[in-house]
Amino acid sequence: MDLQKNKRIVFDNVRLATEAAHRPEHSVSIIAVTKYVDSTIAGQLIDIGIEHIAENRVDKFLDKYEALKDKSVTWHLIGTLQRRKVKDVINFVDYFHALDSVKLASEIEKRADHPVKCFLQVNISEEDSKHGFKVSEIEAAIEEIGKMENIQLVGLMTMAPADASQERIASIFREANQLRKNLQSKKRKNMPFTELSMGMSGDYSIAIQEGSTFVRIGTSFFH
Image (cartoon, rainbow, N blue to C red):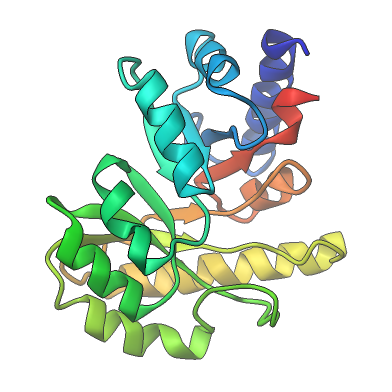
């Protein structure tokens, strides 16, 4: 595994996709998803210039946070979070990408000691297998979450179906960005909605074309 080479390839591809989309340089942040590697490898990534690290499970997040907390890095929790585990992790998280219910938001509101930057997870494709709000549920959820002081809704997170065509993936990502823009235009307190978390190793170039500001890259760093 050549981390330096893999990092260069990922960063070059993101730069090229950003240029092709006529977007400003550095408008896309690259998150390294380290769920399949240990803390040593994650630390090596940080040492070669990775600024964002993500885990999708609370126990793995806490293990890496403890091992690497002296390093300068932004921490992302991207997986489904059970309400009973909120208290264990939420105050170590810089960005939480999977806010998928008002009940979870209420628990974060209760347990957080500061406003937490959260992405509403939206199930654009309305797959039964995926968590997240349906588009039709977003406004009602925001009405409730807007009463909470410790949640800052920075944007939306979505995923495309694994078997979707490139055209379908682009359509889903485009719809997410349009929804984000609509929410941003409302200019609600603690709800800037400036960010879009979408795109993984297999589809991040499409996501960048459609407006993603955070791409979540795992396997491309570690093959």
